[in-house]
Length: 495
Picture 1 (cartoon, rainbow, N blue to C red):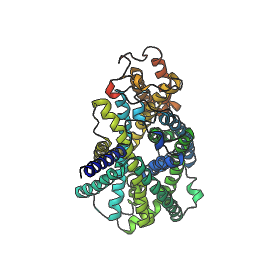
Picture 2 (cartoon, rainbow, N blue to C red; picture 1 turned 60 degrees about the horizontal axis):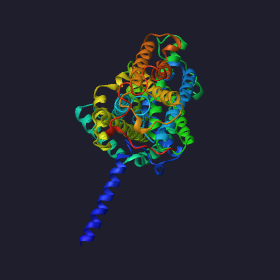
Picture 3 (cartoon, helix red, strand yellow; picture 1 turned 45 degrees about the vertical axis):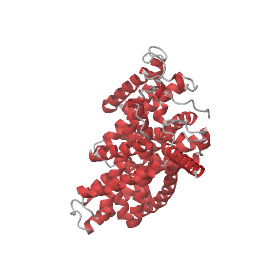
Picture 4 (cartoon, rainbow, N blue to C red; picture 1 turned 180 degrees about the horizontal axis):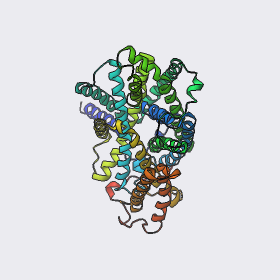
């Protein structure tokens, strides 16, 4: 009996340990070689992250701003730019087996001051979580004919949050399973909705894809093109950071390239094209839908439809395709919210560890991340979308630029030793501050190419960081050289 009880206890302890390992999902350590996956598998996560209502909204905004031709040109340019950034930082993440924020402990910021990277990344990823929640809520009450009341918000947001927490808890395997299934479903349904939007518009598809700029008062063609680049670049910088979270599971550099460029070109070309057709081609049908249900007066119907395009993109799918459109909306949002929650939990794990030495576990970070996202939703982040995109592109490319400058320029491609990481890297902190301020000021008041804040931030980071790190602010200036023992990570295997 004693032997049987001992065996049962050992079995339960082993199972509990395995569950904890799955839940933690190497949040603060290197992914081992046996857990690596192909680029085609990982592609489902990066493409799943950006095939969403927000990206359709951004895509339609870009072509309304600059016209379809210039909008797609901006998309191709940013897609190649973002794919390259994602590959470069993802390649390093694959070698180290670490997520983007943990990576910054050794490259660019230092173990303690990596909380800055986590703060930037958390602001970005949880902001998208909040945006997608708001769009999904608006689409749900529209589909079900509910009023926007406190009770509706509590029930719907509560159910959504519980779903994101459950679906994200058990690590990358569950996230990959959810994302791959729903991404395929979304793409199939998206083709149907695009066809329907084009067919009900009464205009030939070629005519829809030839429309020029629609938003008045935005200046010259060059000004509009620059604004389109800025709007798309926010997602490019954010996606580059997401790439590293998933690239830590990649087997080879080729797998990283597949994952990074597939996602970048999907968000900057496919979603721009799809958003244009759905929003531009389908607005007339939405106007007729509103008039038939006395949801708007004839003189207000167009304005209401255009407002819905900006704040309730999911309603367009419901108008076009009924139940199919409702399913499309949820297929798009569920996979994205699971991925946003997953990446957010990794970032928060590093944030609280670096800042407070607090390691309650990734599950706690999943819950905290969703609570922060709800707070941003309540704060009305959807109303601030365009302003938010501008600063987001600057922050994310600055962060990426510092990591790349440290590894590729300062270290010349040589990996950092885990036991030599500094607690604070003043060169990185100063670079993040200076690059962000300079880029934001030029984006707000500069002229020509200097208005591309994300590009200015990247160039300043790549120049300023090596200049400081190799001269005035060499390793160990502030921290005595090495990290505190409790912040050191085990030396990872080279891949």
